[in-house]
Image 1 (cartoon, rainbow, N blue to C red):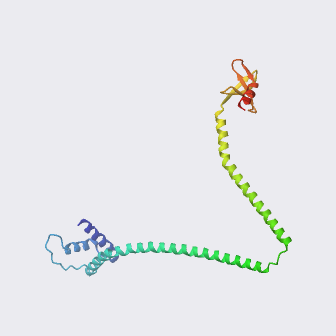
Image 2: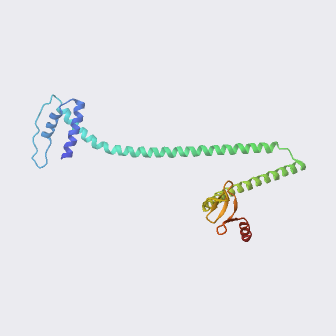
Image 3: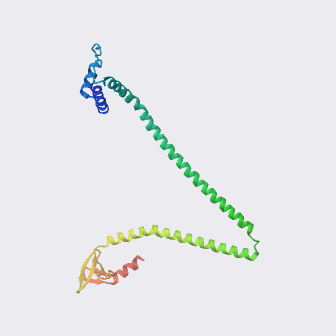
Length: 227
């Protein structure tokens, strides 16, 4: 009942602003003339509200009925609108594909016409011309293959480059050095006692901790052993 009363109140308020009648008086009229559940139906009393009662009653009943009737068309309209948009998109897509196909067909027809015209106007070739043409064709094919090979080599180099760079990076990460001085000269020494030039970072030799001297030949011997 509360939701029903709220609905009636909202309808009455809406209509009062439109038809300029007193809301409180209208609600009182509705309350007195609506049949209450569980009670005997009261006889309707004739109440005059400045000649606007009949209009108000008709509008309340009509507005409530119209509100219920309008719910289904709104839903149907939204569905129809959705279907219309979908159909419009499909039609636009089909039109675009048809246009693309028509352009391709026109292009193919133009090419065929051009080739037919060229074939018609072509003069018989001599043996020398045929030989020159074949030579030029072979040369063009050779250039094409060379370019293709260069592209493949470039792709292979691009694929290998990150791996090589990562390997160098890892190698650099593994070598940790610190400043080291021998006879007043500064070097860089790794954890494995390898000495590097402080400026060029080139390998100088290996530091012998027991003899407290640089062994220049030791690295060369190690390289020979590895070979």
